[in-house]
Image 1 (cartoon, rainbow, N blue to C red):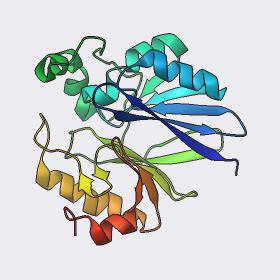
Image 2: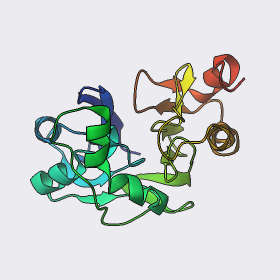
Image 3: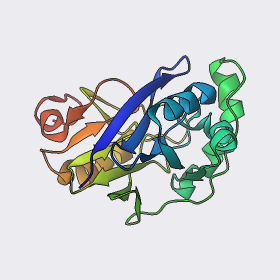
Image 4: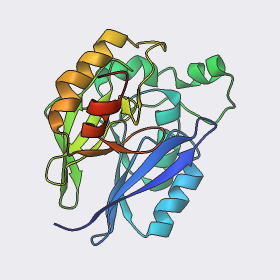
Length: 213
């Protein structure tokens, strides 16, 4: 197995963890959740010297998908995900900008393809299983690399916290169910990155996270 690396590029006023996942040997990769600042993300991809194969979206909130169309225009990479249940959110990113009072530059997004539970996506030798995890957003998905025991959880689970459920489409009970039925069963040894803040391990969150204990 070649080396899987991750580089975080904090973007927009929300300081969202746009994540470049890439193979350090094969020099191929993907960008997960380009919420904005597409020029900055494209520059980071170029500096890493990787060929960008796709743009993956975990969900349709403005701080995760607002820069996807611009990044596609800059790189030619297709936009993959999230689940179709986030179509309304993706079509209202510009409206979300007005609601949050943030500047222009984020755009409504049309994915090249939607993702479903049970699909597999990947780049190089690295394969990720797709899980549909609603609650924070109706069409939220997460990506799990079983071989490397690594996951990208978007805004479902954080170090010491969970995703907000007071935004349009959010539901607390649904989110907790997604965490207990989809995330925790991945295994206590699984390390993960999230859309905001530091990474963690599922076992650490199972033991200490006050929202799910």
